[in-house]
Image (cartoon, rainbow, N blue to C red):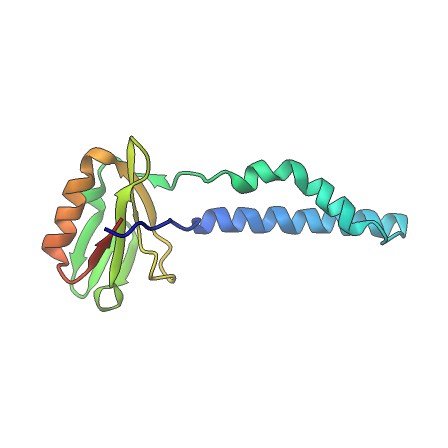
Length: 142
């Protein structure tokens, strides 16, 4: 199977955006108050240095105890929890191990649907079998 690097979730991207925007605003405010725009780049760079640990840390997606409970085919839609995805637009699903305890379910080739779930790795084979039986035309990637 192909190896796939999972993208950051929507929540992580929003958090990173707000941290970056607030840092830029802080630097601009300091420069405006002191009426000196010369060192704006340096101050912004130095103020972001402590935030790199937040930027580099990847948080685990929402963890579900029973992934099979959330999966359902309803008419022409795949329902995952509260989200519905048209089956005709669904070509690939990423289902694979996240670490030694958890597996992950994502839809990386459907950017309109930001669905990221982690679940116990013991359910990984059952989730793959569910996709093979219910949606045989969908390619499972790891």
